[in-house]
Length: 372
Image 1 (cartoon, helix red, strand yellow):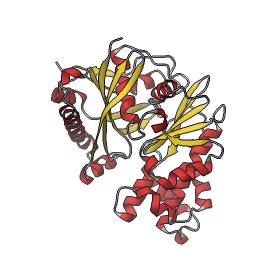
Image 2 (cartoon, one colour):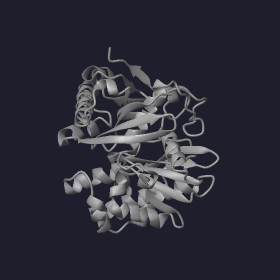
Image 3 (tube, one colour):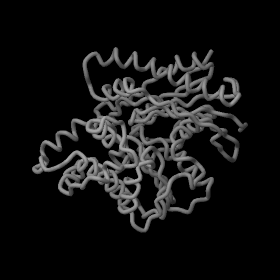
Image 4 (cartoon, helix red, strand yellow):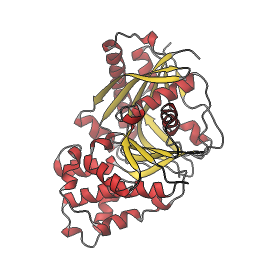
């Protein structure tokens, strides 16, 4: 295998922007060489989040949004190349996750939908695009998510991290990777998604800076218990979930059903949502074959100091640190993961997700759209 560069693009369920990373893949090592974040403007953020649930004229809205996201992705790729004196021929392929609008692994006909037109992205950059990573896994009976655990395994291996160990991604939805004699991974439940939307609703800003607003509130035990009674948390893995299940409507419905909701301040709900994330992660850890000695955290949640402290409190005797200790900045793990998945697709490497997603066999993930 020769040395090649790949660009990974990730836009998560928080829908706050797109992350770009250039990953150099060599026969025995990987290195993240450059990164870029393009924030989404408020209007675009609103358009994306409105598409998370069914609504009027949604197919037309989705189609236009897919083109917009492809153009933004192309802008990011071309900006990243220009700022590092690279040209399209220096990049073997783009790993384009796309923006998830639907993830329905439990439907009678399971499907997943990520938008951001791959053909338009390839045409605007002159680089082949690997996209639609999740559909093949679902076609083989898998959940289609999470896919990052295989990359997390590479990170742990290259840093000779002792097992058992775990990697926790705190995006809109949380997911955990467990490595020992077996590699496991599954979604833990809500993370930044509900925290951000509740903060936006009451504070007119997209996120709770360092968790300060949540820290000013008082978590409600009865409400947390009610939330943790959701069947998803007791469901055995492999499992995955998304914004379609833990929606703003779900949150508002549970609040309306809560006996003492009138006594709760908005910051109390925010504090309770932080506790929901921390305790659902702790519950997920308790379901693992062995208790990991360390949990390495990545994703936007690492910037919420209050959430990180509640995680440490919920996971006593476990070292909770960020993936920086593994040599990858926590902000860029997901973008790097999809660059690496593009590498696997271009090298025709079959990946084994049988114990992670429940797929029936190893397979090569992703569809290639050429720039020709």
